[in-house]
Length: 238
Image (cartoon, rainbow, N blue to C red; front, top):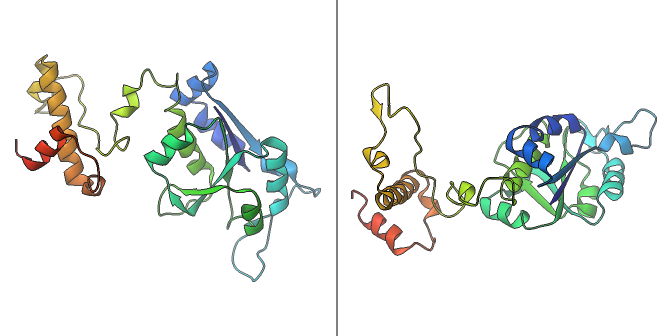
């Protein structure tokens, strides 16, 4: 898969996406991420990419021309996503859908936003990472890219590394523990030390269901529950 990120701060995105799991995946060729500086496509001698908004107001607005020319030069006809608090909230379901594409592009806004005309002209989708505002779209773009990349073949060790996690389905993930078996008087649940894989699997499912019921009951509404999950919900104290 290829991901193009169009931004005024490519070094910022590179710093995040060159480290850890995603950095290793890029080095191994599991994903191709290219960060392009929109400023390289300006048509004025000062490389200016913004101007004052028509109608007044505070701040500056990114101009349509450099964004459009950058997109046309780097990734024309590619599914373009604009990161904005006004977009649809990102979900794991949408991440799974985007991970099936061969090529996407992500546009990072800055300042007070982007000229609406270029959004109407080339943007296919607007995505928000939550109901809050940041100084630019670079961090949201990195979050989107990370969430997609970890679902790609060869990025994580196996499918279980993500299929059992929170939000992949309709359940939050069960609690996790590691050595030592006791820390500050808190012991790891005995069942996890039992070696009985069937009981351990049942415990993990119970904890996932109960944790979801406690913290995010909305995820269970309308979900297609298995008989085992329904049994746990019907007898939450078991």
